[in-house]
Image (cartoon, rainbow, N blue to C red; front, side, top):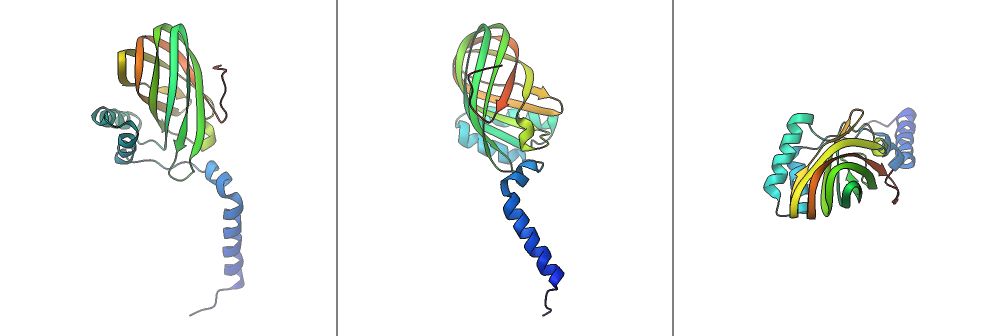
Length: 192
């Protein structure tokens, strides 16, 4: 058995100390690793419950279009509209290697849209460079048509990052609108 050199001991100690000091800050700077489709479907099954078949189809369709996501959000949201509307939500963003983080989202919309709904939401996030790069605005078009309850998904984009919110909820909603979601670290009532 050979004795470790002074350089090996110092390198090992420095790497361990740096890892302990950097901990969460280093994890947030790292690019999140991608999730496999079956991991997302399993997580969605536990979160949504009975809508398993529709969830699996949406996750597979999104995977064919954008590849594998490197983060996802599980949360709840509420929205309402009468021509102009607003959406508010909160949840936890999960990554494989950059930690989990509580996030909030809110945003305005405008269009031919009326109704209100409350949803459980799973958002698949593609091309996320770092955990902090989710804190911005993502624009898109959304359409809803349901009475009492429904299930649907849409896509929002900002630069190279794509978000695919998958929603299952209750309420009455009919229409199409254009708007954006703004993600923040703190809750706020200001949708802009």
